[in-house]
Length: 376
Image (cartoon, rainbow, N blue to C red; front, side, top):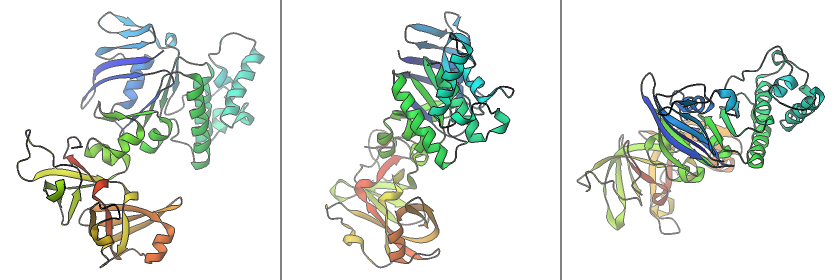
């Protein structure tokens, strides 16, 4: 029972124009900045918004077809919907919020089913509490339990984990992931956080101004961003410059602000052929970057596998612990960030203001047509 959508709808500053298909058991994570049109997609699927043109089908059932005048109301679409702001009934307990809409069985049976759903999200003990007595994270878990308790035909999740702290977010993520795998329904998740999208989504689609600019497995999207916009959203480092061909099939990029980096990607073609320096963005991931004292030539700029290495002089601008890693903010003429271990920081004795050399492999450097697609 797959979920299929085609929709075109004029919004305030752009036109939403998307087509997507979600297989049973697949969770498609729509990732992008606020205002990109992600939540509008959910509202169209749920029947809360009729697009200017389009069609929605779930399995054999046609939920919407503007050309044929078909538009089932939301209550006939059997969608489990987690709203960004919960939408709980303030006068009902957590258990009654979850049980609302359950059909069949006695009141006691419906309560038992609701409490079991709450326990799945670690808040069974709050069954009789009303929303005003719950924290933001607890209210959000009630909303998650309510969305899945009726075993919906499709699951729609609008920023479902935003209000959760680190501990409850991990618990809710595990529970939600188990439920998505267990019920084998198509699910669409909306988030501005690529890590959340990659954690819960079996597939990620990046949305920019109403259009899907890249779709694929989370690891694939992170490793091979199609545009500088995608690279930035996934947390990659993005530097700008102009590219030209170098020896051994490498691309050489003269960076805006100074410095040069090499990539194993080819130079983007302009009009079908590379004609002189081409404006590009180059990307790598913070964890690919190593830091060295000034004056040290990292492996003579060649790693043990024979791949050329890049080396940029940089000034440390920030040192921020993140879990068991440390993110080091750098200024190379353009902002750069490296993620290294705590022992590496201690070995270098790093402090804000220090000068270092940032190094990474040419093979870990992507070259993107500025505003366009990857050359690889």
